[in-house]
Length: 576
Image (cartoon, rainbow, N blue to C red; front, side, top):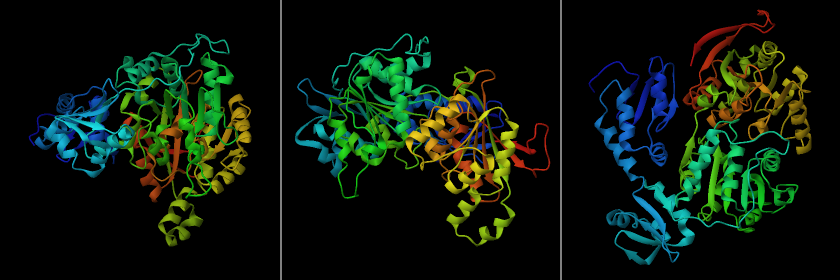
C-alpha cells in the first residue's frame, strides 16, 4: 500500500481497520467507523475495528451503500484501500436487498431474487424445506407461510439477508393515545430523537416497516419509545422484559403517559398471570419449566390474544427458546429495544433476521452533549493482589484465580476511599460474587441487594434509595437491567462476568440518568493488577470506547496517603 498522507486509519486486507487514537481526526474517523464496523480491541492508542457482514448489513438497513462505506474509509485512510477490501465491501453490501419476501394479493408468500441465486440457495436442504417445491417460477419461489422466520434465519447464515416486505397483520385494535400531561400533572411530549426512532421503526406503514431494533443508551427513554410505538400502532401489544422490577416500571409508565386504564394492562410473571390488551411478561416466566424434558407451557401466551405488536425489551438478552417462538411470529410487528446489540452468545444474526435490522442507533456521547444523560467520567483503578492471597493465587487453577482476583479483599479500602471522594453523592457498589458483596456491605454499613431477596424487599430498598434515605447500595447483577435509580451518580464495579461488554454498558447505564445541578456521573471499575482481571476489563470496555468514552487508568496507593477530602491517593495513568 502506498502512503498518501498522515491520516488516522490504516485499512487492512483482512477487513480490520486500525485507528490511531492520538490523531486529531480520530474522533471524526471513529464516528464514521461506528456506522459500519465493530471495535474488537484497543491496546494502547491503536484501536482495531472489524468490518463484518453483519456490520455492513445493519449499515445498509440504515441506508448506507457500499460506496458510502468506501468513501468514509478512503477519506480517513493513510493508505490506498486494499483491493480485497473494496471487493468484499461491494460484494457483501450489495447482497442486502438481493432477496425479497413479498405477499401476493391472494395471501401467498414469495421469495424473489435472481434465478441463478435462487437455484443455488435452493440446493441447501434447510432452504428447500421452507419452499413449496411445486410452486416455482423464474426469479420467484413460493414459501411455506409457517417457514417465514426459519427461512430468513437460514439465508442469513448462508450470507444472504432477506429484505422482508411481506407485511404484518394489525392485530386487535386498541383505543390508546399518548397524554400531553402525565398522570402526575407534568407536561409530556416525545423528545425529538424519540420521535425519530419511532418514525424509523414504523416507516410510515411501509411493508418493511414495523420490525427492527432501536439502540439507545440507558436513560434515553427506551420505555417511552416503546410506549410511543404502541400508541402509533394502536393494537394489542405483548411486552417482554428482563425481570419483575421492569414489568412494574413498564406498567407505571403506561399508566403515567398513555390513556390506558389499569384494567387494560396485564402483568404475566411469577405472582400473576393476567392476559389483557397490553400484557407485560418476563423472559424468565416464558422459559420456565419443571423439567428439561417438559414443554415451555407459558409460551402459549404468544397465542392467547391477537397481538399486533411484540416489544422485546433488552433484546440482547433474548433467550434461545424465545428466538424459536419468534421465528413463528413473523406476521406480527416486532420491536427490539436495547442499549447495545452486543450478544455474548454471538447470535446477532438471529436478532437481525427474526426481530429485524437496526433501525436507529443514537451514540451515547450525542445525548451527553445535549444534557439528556449525565456527563460521564470512566476510571479503571488497578490494585495489587492482597498479600495474604498471593500464595493461594499461585497454586490455584484458572477459574479459582479469576475468583481470587475478583474478590481481592483490598478492594474494600478502594471502595471506601472512592465513596469518601464523592461524599454526598448517591452510589451503587456493583459486583458478581455474593460473599464479596456481603463483606462489602458489612464494611460500608450499607444494605445489600441480591437475588436472594424477595421481590418486595428489593422494591423497598430501591424506593428508599430513590428517596435519598439510602446513600450507598451494594447490588449484585440483578440490578444490571431495567432498574430506574435516577439519583445514582457514582457506580463502583468490583467484579463482573468475565469480559462482558454487554454487562459493562448496562452497569454504566445505572448512573446515566440526567442529574439536577452539574449533571455529572462517575463509573469506576476496580481490578487486580497482574491477573486475568485486567484482560477482562479491557474487553469489557470496548463498547463504551466505541461510543466515544475514555477510561482513565489509575493505580491505588496505600490508604495512609490521604488526599484533601479524605480519599486515598490515585496515581494517574494514561487515558484509554
